[in-house]
Length: 314
Image 1 (cartoon, rainbow, N blue to C red):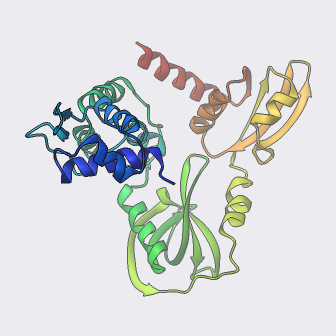
Image 2: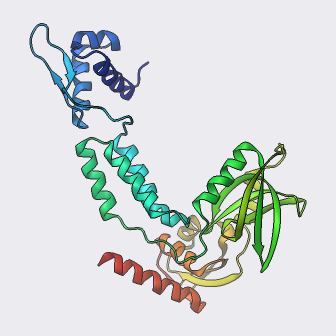
Image 3: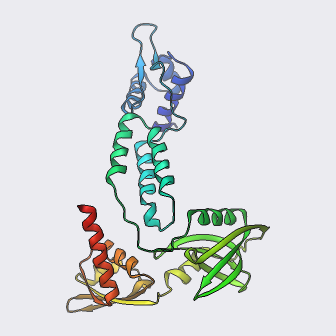
């Protein structure tokens, strides 16, 4: 059975290869009727592709003379998803060149029909996403190289700084994960002879060694991430009171985040974090009224966040 989108694209391919093809011929090729073919033609015209019809007994459909189709064709939804992802790259806390980001957005908009292009340009011009104040952001090149090492099953040599100590590590990489505001490489550390997580912002120099390794089939990557990152308490403590029923708060707060306890004002939430700035974003995104009890660092992070939001609104 044909998918409707697939049929529309088939019509476009036939128009390119056989200018002047008739509605009856299109209907025969698509195993449908002429009325349905007209709907497919209308869909192409709606997205800005100039399909023209020659009336009369020997008439047919063709693309406007001189019109060249771009090498890639995206739907409005596909293009919007890519632009939103690119605009939100700062939230990924990666040291990614803004020149590369806006260059990619420009190329995407250039291959769109005029109507879709205008809507997407409005989106990219009016959407502003603030990046975090975290200064030590991992480079996109490092993450790309690490991904290639994972895929090729090759050892990655890294310089790693933890607790003020710099060590040289040979890591058999298994995967990459973003959790709690940081990027992590998960793999077998030959120095420690154990599986470890490595924060990307703590990795200095790196090199794909070219040495292959064999992945261990008994290693559950997802389970390891959950155990060692999701449930690992940060070094910074905080406490807030949510002004909402316990049932509502429990739907928003995973158990590993901290403890929940009913109190006269609502729900007392006590937890740990690696970054008050990141925790401020998390609390605001929950969309539950709350009051910070402690510490001052979290209050300051929320005030700084409110200043950023106010500046964006102005």
